[in-house]
Length: 168
Image 1 (cartoon, rainbow, N blue to C red):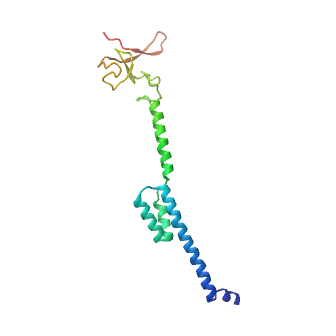
Image 2: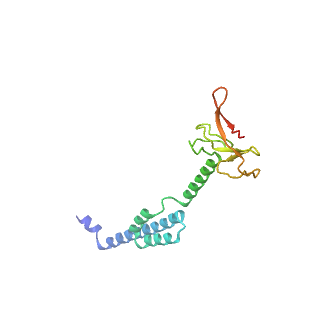
Image 3: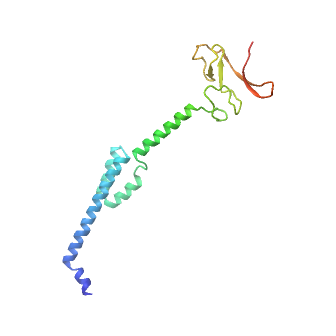
């Protein structure tokens, strides 16, 4: 019993209080520095930066819990990587267009979708270039509605073939 009373004497209590206070201040300072470093990685918003840092300084551990709840979920680097990935996917999709009817991949110069056999483009009668259906003027020869629609017809062997529509 004397052992416990000697440990908890007034002098030892002051030393323990000093060490616990030092440990608490060290931990508090570490959380403030960590919040600061994490905020630099996650946001460019000065308002969020200031509010979160003040919250971590004024309310040492409760502020850290609130910061975990409301901080941005991804870092700026991860956001930039995701934006690049979206941009690359967009350009990949633009390079490989899809049929508007069946969404199968088609080449840029296809006039008829090989899957659903629907017209996806037309051919200019003047210059025989492939045109989008929505175009009212051929951008290659500047001719107006001389666009020949392409029809799908059976050839001699019963296979579907795209042919220019012959008008009189």
